Length: 424
Length: 157
Image 1 (cartoon, rainbow over the protein chains, first blue to last red):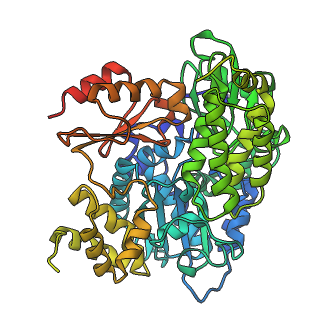
Image 2 (cartoon, each protein chain N blue to C red):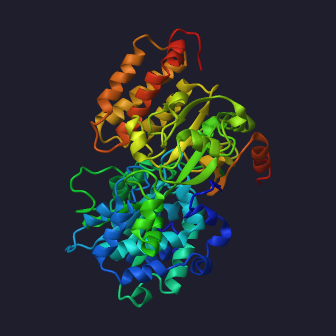
Image 3 (cartoon, each protein chain N blue to C red):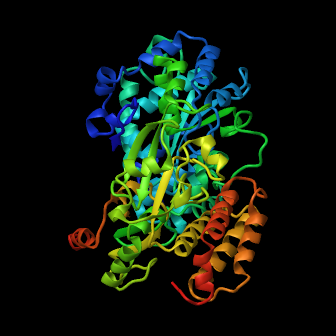
């Protein structure tokens, strides 16, 4: 966990065990000062400050957070809810785990402010089931906060009541999709819902609901303490404020979390920051934003690593999970593994995704095992075309985009298998 | 019907009741708590959960079967789940799975005859910066290699 010089880190210096307790948060991180300040502001002023900050969702979609909060109706017959998406299931992503285990109070305070801003009195942290230890650590922090009056009735004498509950998932990628998550929270199968209604109208238990990622919420205390303009200025590209925690994994010498000012570095520079390609080998490919992101070749990495610039080159920043692949790794094997994942995780509701992912897996499997047919690459592209944009949620697109990009950009590797020159 | 789940299960669940506006929302926590006690989720346990929450046992099973963490079949005392997703694969997870398969003479998904070890492949565990990673029951083990795996597994009673 290294911070590049000249940047202003918000998180990474706190990623160790000493920073976890409430006492540290209060003494060293100006803890619960932002919520106290927020209680003296109007709800609109808080939302406007977040809008000004250019904070965009850190879970993958990059939706402007202030705007999302603004969708919540002021008056509602049903209780409103705030839900933290801590499912962190996009392959390659591991930042929220550190935020939760090292800076849990930053998340709790962020949720407190968000809940006050939208008028929610109960929040849930939906944490992936495998993070057993992190769930326990969060619960300890929540208990500390209750004991000192930072949660519960009349928080900090403000008259505002807020309860917070940790809810564990149970191993389903699809529960990172916000409506799948809400169904799971309600005790159902985690199948995504038809939208509209959007969660802002009818979310958890039928009430207006904000769903925000962990890192998104941990930015909120900073924004209230230091102002939306300060946060916005940390970002070095338009419409993207703050810093970004980038999860670098795969074939680099120093995998781990790196915090940079949003849009301040290219993909190439981030690989260098992570110690360069493992063993001094040549770079072959980069998956820039979790396994759902279309792949970049070694020639395409001089792009600025942020939401809009990556979108312009046909891929996405997603949850800032950058996976690096060196020269001697087989791309056919890699995409087969990725596709197997989506076929396994498809919830099965939508035919194009359920059938298409399985078909893609099977076709890739046979190519890998020397049984590929000449027309298989066109068949694969045809299937991706029949999945993308034709499903309720983004899982279908997440499965199709990578396959199409691998086939188009690394075609000779597939052809070598089909010609029988290679097999797995 | 005789109760299988302990008083502790009911105490834990009753504590959670005020945290949710509906009773069905208790289902995932109940399945976790029950599995912690029983190691897996036999039909009788799911029936008991259904009775406690006030839903049909089929609804319990419908939900439980959606999530991979709920064991609908018995597993060994030590449940090994090796991540073989992208980041771990790039860092040699396949060799680790192969090594454990050989070590115990079981295929992925299998349990040793003495019911001590169950081996499974797992999707991304969110430990990609410290890949390859695996879970042993509830705990994470990261930066694995064959040597550390052997040390860990050979030390288990």
